[in-house]
Structure formats: structure tokens, C-alpha cells
Image 1: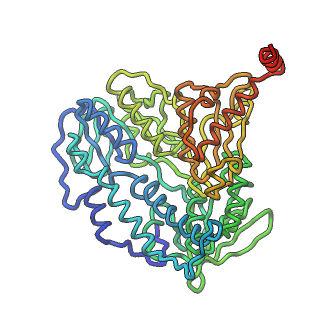
Image 2 (image 1 turned 135 degrees about the vertical axis):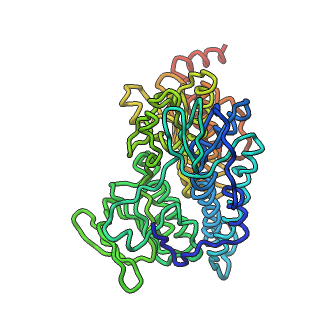
Image 3 (image 1 turned 90 degrees about the vertical axis):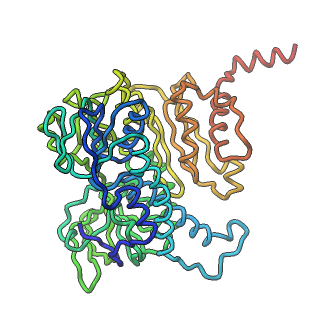
Length: 506
């Protein structure tokens, strides 16, 4: 893959040297294998590291094999760097809108993009200590760097050494699914794997794909000053989210100045006079846009090639990944999988949860099920869109009657005071009960707010109980209590009201 950046040189500053020394030290020598390991973990992203630390803490002999960098995508090319630059982008947006807060817009707002990326590298280097070789070794884990290849049902090789295992975990993650567009490889493009290496801001940016990654980075780069266009082949972006949530985000994009073209496909890329010309087709109409950089965000595919899974008797599919049962066990009973290499929901917190299931099931005869997990997620745009549980359409497909309680954020005092009134809290319950089936939150801090509802669902706490929870005032999470109060009012049926009036009039 070519590095598509105005400045193609990855900065090797002190922050980068510190990160690399943590996650792949220069001159590292692999240890001499123990025979056999209780658990061999292939891949040291979130799932692999969580499993390794958990198993070692419980007394297991553990080895981790990593091809490139400890920490995986989350640390190096995903959650950590993206959220660092999103925070700076939000600050610039607030500076431009200072009058909304009773302040003056600065006379000159100059985006220092190299400083933005330097801050990101500093944060990434600091957090890399938690995923470091030093921390793994201190926990008693043997760390191997190199390409892992299974040699049979109970063995794997790395850098010429053979490791035997009683149990193994495949946690090799996923990589960007790059669209097959003629001319794109020759022109060069960005993915999450190299976009954080930029040291200069592209003046014009095309984002191909309207999923979470594309939406988050499109908004950030637009706020930094890039002329930004999203081309989404589907009739809507964030197609899995509720339509009113996606519409609110669409309006926010329009305010930021992002151009969104739906039902639009990139069909050809060419380079002329130092700029990338991209041919777009939308409902039969063809147009050409000139850009300086192209970012692809059309999904991810599991890393299953090169592992020699056939020798281990592990079934897999190149598109969906390693096949596992509800206990995360593969077709080889000795081998399990966790994280993006096997899961539909490719989130860091899902990888973490699945790794903990594997440790219990593989090493301690546990029977924990993946299907028992309640998984929230969040798209970290501004406003954020967070969700947990069932959507209304899913409940109806299962013939579950649903009643929804919606509180607009403009009815919440703290949201008004913060001038963050865009969005809502929407909680779905099973009709005639207070059992929470799911929720969607659109708000500046939706990712923080969704956790309260997730806890309630996991603990079996109904919406009526949430109405009795005293929330600190004023907070935006008061919207959740308002939704619970709205449910409580539905319990005051005409007959109950009549009885109450009779009681009070006695």
C-alpha cells in the first residue's frame, strides 16, 4: 500500500521512538520456548493482550506472538490516535462558534496540523506503556515477534522456534477492506493504518464510505480546514443506525461544511498535474472531483491468511473470519478465537469481552456464551451516536411488542446550558413491562451516557427502577431519568387515578 500523504515521511520523533520501544523494541530476542504452554496467543491487539494478562494472572504459562506492534489497531491506528485528533477538531469547532457561548471568536484561528499530530503521537506513546513488552514480561508472559504459522493441532512456529500448546487463541484482528477501484493503488490512498502518519493537512479530501471511521475522520479533517467530501454507495450513511439519528448527524455535517453524496460510487482514479481525479457515478450521473487525498473507510476484513490454519484443522472464511461457536471455540477444540478475526461487531470493548470468555472457557472448563453479552457501541462524531440492545425494527422482526420513550436533548437543562441541545435519548421497553430492550442516544456525550442503560440491561434493572435513581443535577444524563419518569407516568392508568382521587378526597 502506498502512503498517500502530502508529507509521506512518518515522523520519527521522541514520541514515536518511545512508542516503538514499548510495543516492538529494537534488538528484541525471542525467548526459548517452554514445553508446552497452557495458552499460546497469536496476535497482540486488544483481545490477545487481555487474554494473555488474564491467563497469566491466574497462573497459566502464556506466550504471545505478534507480527508487528503490540497493542494492535486500537493503540496504533484506531481508537487512541483517532480520539486524540477528534478532541482537537472539536476544540477548533468551538473556537469558531465562540459567540454561541457568550465569548468572542478569536481574531485569527490558525490550525497547526503538525502540532495536532504531534499531540496525538505524544498521547499514543504515553498509552503504549500499558501495552508494552515490559508490562507483559513483568506479568510472566513470554513475548515472541514474528510470523506465526500453525504446524498441527497443538503447535505453532515463529522465527524458527516451535511452540507447543495445550490451548491456543487466534486474535489476529482485521485490516482495512480496500475497495477495488481502477487506478486507486497507483494514485495512493489513506486508511486507518497510515492516516495518522500525516504531517500536513490535505487541502481537499475524499472519504469513500459512510461508516463510523469515515464519518469520524471526515468531520475531524473538515474542522481542521480540509474541503471534505463523503461518497457513500448506499442510500444512507451509518446504515445500521436509526434514521432520525443519522439525519441529525447529516445536519451536523452540513453545518460543518461536509459535502455528502449518497448512492454514489467511485469508479476510477487517475493522477493529473499532481492531483487525484476521481470519477463518481450517482444514479446514472457521472462527475469528476479533484482531491489531494483519498481516505477509504469501507469496512474491515479478518486477518486469516498466512496462519496455515488448515494444518491446525481450523475452519475459516476469508470474508467472515475464523468460524467459532457460541463459546468461541473453533473446529479444533484446542483452539479458540476472539476479537475482530471472528466477531461481527469489531469493537475494542467486544474484543476485550470475548478474550475474557476464552480464558474462562479454554483454561477453566467455563461455559460462557458470546450470545449472552450486551454490547453497546458509539460513533464518536459530534454529536455522538451510541446504541445498545435491540432496534425497534429488530424487536418487530422477533414479534416483540415495543414501546419507546424519547426525550429530546433540548428538554434537558444541562444540554441547554452547554448549548448542546441537538439529539435525544430514546429507550425501548417491552410493551406492558419496564424491561429495557435497547436504547439509542444522540448527544455530545452519548458514549458516556449509554453505559448507564447498558448496566441496567445487564443487571436486569427495569426502567421504573431508573426513575428512582437520583441523578446529579444538572447533567445531560438527566435525559435518561426523564425517559424513566415518562414510563412511570404511563402506569397511572385512569382507574388508578380514580382510586387516588378517592383516597385523597376521603
